[in-house]
Image (cartoon, rainbow, N blue to C red; front, side, top):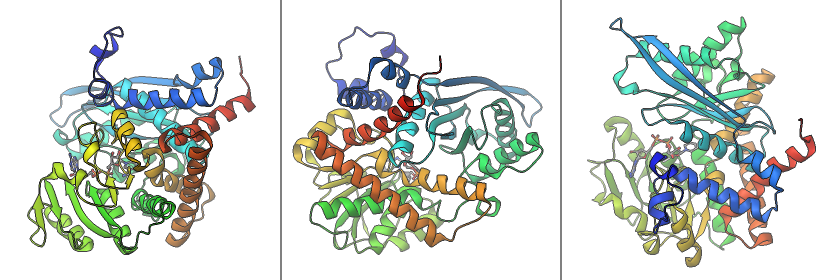
Length: 435
Ligand code: NAD
């Protein structure tokens, strides 16, 4: 989360950059990486300034009548970071911690991610400062519809296409699609992605991020002369991304030796039964209590003996403190921003192959792109087609990052930024400056 105190004290020397910057503000760390890539790309100063600033920032009041009859006013944001390559793409979150700074940075992140997998989208993000846990479904619907109507000028299949994010889901996307369509006086399914399949969502979207993780991990292991078959994998976070990645890797022959969630961790060096664990979590909502594996300290999951580590929970979990103890040869960043800048340096020195977040978890936005294409074409693909096309995009992006790593002699994270920022910059150069 951004810290206004740090922002307003630019002259303070921070002795521990890892603690003060990256661990509290992963987005500052992200822009540091952008700067590194921009330097290597020798971006001209004008273009550098353009790419460091969001195109459009909306702050809006979202008043609703609560079930009690009282009026409450929430604050909503939508930031379009860069739309040079196509319509803005990015999720909407409902959370008390939403800030404009955070939304801005996440919108930049989406810009690089879409460019890296070379899909024709720019980057955006949005949010409403509210606590959905304290709201009824009817109140949530009113917040969604009022927020949608207040940002309706930016929304549209050709201009800005939201998706689910923290505390929003396909139910919320359905309300956004309906509100937008009512204003336009016709049904516009392509205005959001992550919708229910019955109303134009894509088959394979739910599994897409975890599936993408599996594809790029397979490619990274092949580069190291290894295979997913028999690889020992530890997965932090057993939600949408982590459980699907674990399941699909196990189906490719990997041995999932450890998994964790908020409640705790499980370990079995012989391999956990992932479908059984998924069924357990569906029923019990957490891993803890599962009777067929040894519980262990969830903090130790990251340093457990394994070949592949998949942090798929939350940001800033791999730090300068635990990075030296990490045993994995490959880290696949399912989560956004799990590794701090200082940890990155340690992992690089240790020779760990890091598949950075903007590549590793780009499967989700790639299938969102497929959803948008299907909605616009009015022609829907079977799941095999979705998965095959996802594989081809993920493998191509992986190979481009690997080639850039060698060309510039940089780590895979900086290489990913070089590919992504380079693509956005190229579009700006071709389009020229309209001034
Ligand atoms: P989710 O809410 O479905 O699952 C999160 C999981 O992490 C849960 O099992 C939770 O218990 C666990 N967790 C949280 N804190 C933990 C901790 N400290 N230690 C261990 N486990 C912990 O969320 P998700 O959709 O799977 O997203 C996970 C990450 O992947 C987030 O960073 C998200 O931004 C990123 N991501 C998700 C998608 C997507 O399509 N779902 C796409 C791109 C990136």
